[in-house]
Image (tube, rainbow, N blue to C red; front, top):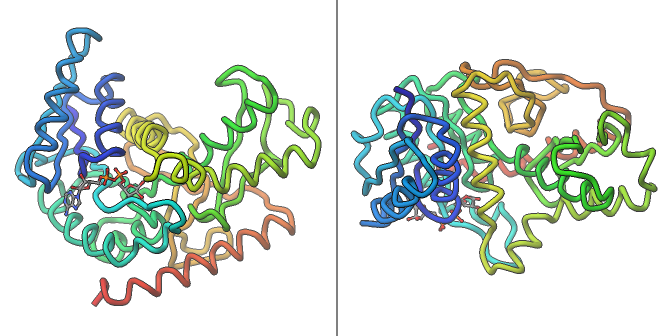
Length: 312
Ligand code: APR
């Protein structure tokens, strides 16, 4: 029996659970929230679609009872506050670090062998906090941001190219941050052909800029941060791990010398399978990309300093 737990039954957590159930990624999914009734209610609502959609995955909700999450194969952490219009993800650190630190302790007690996927923002910083406090091996801690940023990048490319979904490939590395993420336009392809064959530098610069502020744009429109693509991206990472897909997906990983940096979590291309992050792939960066990556790493290190209280 395969089992996934999603912590936080808010917008992102419930959407992730819904995608996991609709795609029948696991035999069992558990949704946990601290707010009484919310996870039970959302689980019941989603399960009432099972007969309509022909779903056999069992989803249950629990109000903070970690015994129900026991022996999960994968645990997704979405608990925490989302940003409001005009806020940076970094402004969430104080509140979310306390939540993530308390949640991860319970998660590890209940599921010591799980692969943990972090969504809570600021995602690179929260992923680093999990490394520092959970005692889990580094390969079993994955930050989801790059999967989402890459999905947004591919969507923007697809619009500009007027291409079908699935025909465009591309990825984003660096921080999950409006200023420091790095959409890798040089490597993006339409059916194997570099997109530079179809799009001008001005068009590609606009696609990169729109991708970087993708989350902020949605927060401005919605009044809170987005959830459909974040939830689906989290489910994609769960599936890659649980089904041992060996998929190459950019995720926030603890680097120990890769790309020339150590002791921080940052978005890098990762091969995901049963072991979690089975390999960090070091692709060749040109001088400009190296400089952007260095700036991104420096910003991530600086933000990690704000964890001092949480790490005491
Ligand atoms: N344990 C369990 N659940 C918690 C805890 C906790 N200690 N603290 C908060 N929660 C729950 C809340 O009760 C709420 O239901 O986390 C849920 C968060 O849901 P939303 O407020 O809807 O936020 P959401 O949009 O889902 O974003 C969650 O993901 O993308 C990031 O920036 C976003 O950090 C935010 C997180």
